[in-house]
Length: 133
Length: 287
Image (cartoon, rainbow over all chains, first blue to last red; front, top):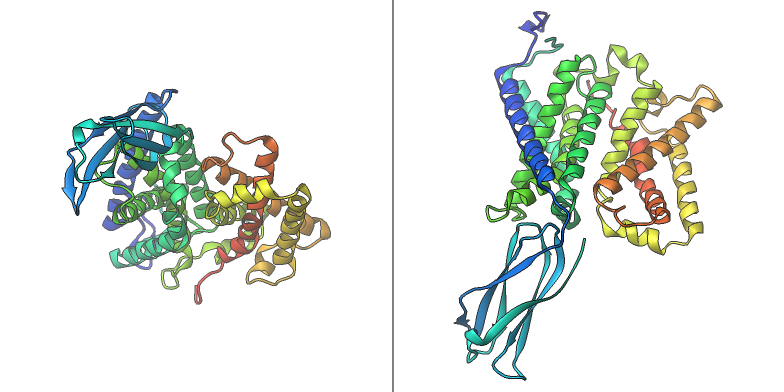
């Protein structure tokens, strides 16, 4: 370390500066390592969307059913449209929910709404479409 | 390890405070832009790493040629650049978390991508803020120091122009509007934009008498003036194209569209490379 004097103080970093530098080094190393590992694990492949229906509840006079969508594929899915249909009859009701993005490995949650008398067991959810990046 | 300066803890704390203010001031538009959040999980992580490396080089150039300590050693420049990146990462993580853009339910890949894409502009803002928002009592000199005779030198000015161009171009590069303008503009209009950008650069550097232009703009001969204007536009185009690439705006686009987008972003980029570059070298009163 340089021993020159400047304004009466020894030239060099003080404790705060060394602390900030140490923390910054850790942060930068962590983000680089995370992204580096992610890059190494990266594989080309389609999005694979998996839907899980949650427990439906009647709230405010409507049946609300949570929909969880997880992307287990290798590509982000954009503008994901999910259609939930009543399969108990040919003219059953349908509801839709959309998500702007579902990144790789991410899960997003939404709600579909049906009339209060709807039997949740007869509802089936499917992906009706999504865009590629 | 050689150091050129020393500071008391309160002085350092004030310096970090200025850096934080600058980081937020220059990067808030991007922290509040959806397209930047999206690029964090759409882009290949390798490209985000490249963006981090590019920003680190930019920080080194800025700290070396226009930063707070003009006489800083290489070690100090590297340490300052790492610190600015660290502060940028911390600030962007905090803002993204407070605004609900990242949370514990997201996977690490999405969180790290979002933070990294936002943090790089914050880091450049921290660097600029540290150098420009104070330091009148700390004995730091920037380009107004003893080495000020080099303040109009070609390579340092080109490096600072690159920093200014990136700062200005990065704020619009992720937006869809760049693509829309490029897509819908007649080739004649794109050409007009390119010519206007060159004229704009020339006006700013040689006519408008912006503070610092006499000191930092080489104008001894017509050749030097012309070289300055052309270099400024070339730097703006390179910075603009790099920003578009790093924000994924070139993906899947034909060459003509890439060129048109680069020309469109060239307008703010040339402002950054000319007026922005001069503003980056303005020292506070008393410095």
